[in-house]
Length: 417
Image 1: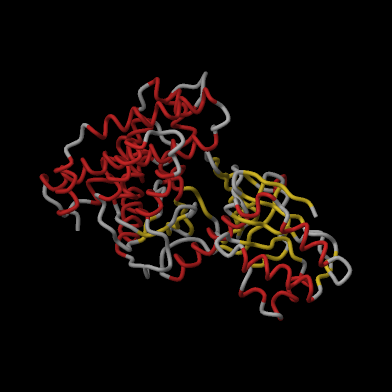
Image 2: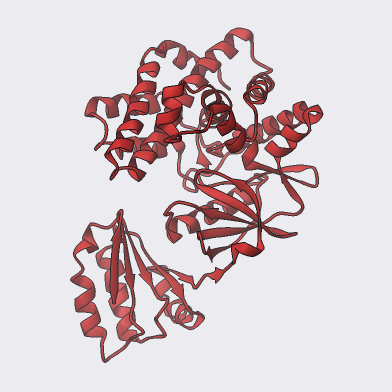
């Protein structure tokens, strides 16, 4: 048995056999693992496991019941091992995932590159989203489950087939026919720019108009609160309290929220738009999506130079070139896209109401950037210089937010239907 512990995830590689000869010794070794009770998740890697007897099953069941507050997942199970867990009812206590199929990226075409993942075309009917970071297999499976919930609620998104393994990490194989990235179409075909913005608005409104059962998806308010609380080692208790109070201002709703709504996360198939990159899909108030769109098309293209360098850690590249690479728009295109998007989305509102809503959108786009910077803090926590830069970014935008008129934010949510 091998044990690895990394950022709250405990990976235990199971032996080749667990039977009457070694079950007792395996149990003793398993429950002696120091991080067993501290881990945020436990992954049992069954890549070497060829046989498990009833005694071995009882040890795994004991683990699942004893550490029931910690999610436990078995991965890389062979069909034979999976069938043993399935027919004995063990899959009611522990989620078991079969061994993942491997996909070689050298035979694929890169379609889009992002900060946390890339999209490849595998063939004429499938694309592959590969995650750059250390996203665990459990989290990727949760994304697949969420995508299926969205699809069955008529959200226009691609159908996820399976989680696969690549030389660059885990990925999700998705159905997509003859697809093109919307941002590329908009940049390359200026005459169709307005029409494509309207397609973006229709998608955004479809999300806002779709209600989900409360138990199916995590509410974005809860997600934001959890991220803020995770920053306790970087920010003061007062800063944490203020940020949490901003979350509490947002009315709770069960509308669909994509989490990262912009043209690079929309693909066109046979003239129809589909959402991709469903990593953050959940439910909540539409402000979380519209603020994200503002973040992409207004905040990022107009970063102050110092904040741009601290936020990205990049040198030797201009902000304009960065925008063209990351969002596939020039700064002028981003400005035009945002103005048309906002005015089309809120075309039924009065000028006064739109002004209230715009203030709320600007406020929460800053909040979303802070959330992103908190995530970067976790990545850079062992690099004091880069960590300090992310904390500087957080405090820069927190100071801007504290200058907003809270009364106008409250008014915005009163008029936002």
